[in-house]
Length: 245
Image 1 (cartoon, rainbow, N blue to C red):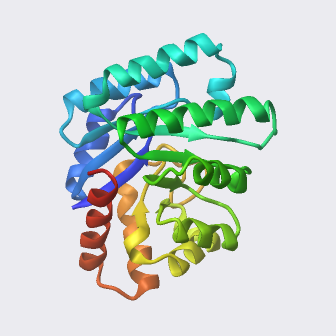
Image 2 (image 1 turned 135 degrees about the vertical axis):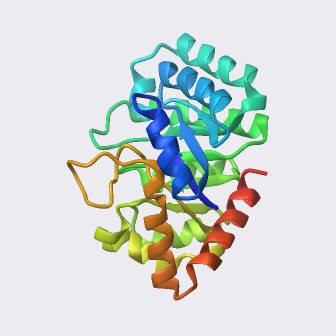
């Protein structure tokens, strides 16, 4: 069984995506919320399709346009649906434009606290804020961590490995020397696979990604690690169960 540990599927053609995922033997699809509306959609989809797992949170820049009261209300909603939520996602910090840094950190810490309270993993968005996110996670002694689409330098990858966290490999890996390096550097016991659908298509911009394509990440891991694909499949499933138990 293949597992897509991070995607955003809540628009049209969900039935088609699920059908193709099943044909590709993708048995688990971790569907990730990024805003208030998406969180409610993925909850409904998790109740409808056995493959879907719900993760909820607020994307860093989406959270910035919300009042503190609305953020607290969303945290309350996630807490109330704890039994159906397997992780807090997609949370973290985004410094592409480096706006409201202190507030981004405040919100990130609030969601880490929620993950600790609920005893579930946090799936981290850390674009251009890789070092800062790691420092906050370390400071708060967060143990259950998946670094989603991590683009930081090699020394930070090593720091993630030393912390015992997981790195998920997106399906753009065939055209990314960075993610190929992450695979070579990271023990198989700390790797996961993701599509980040509808983004990160193996063929690049202009194509919409979907969970069925997660197989591409498995194949690249098998190639770089010089392991049979079936063994990689079993290792990744074991990693998933270890993080999301």
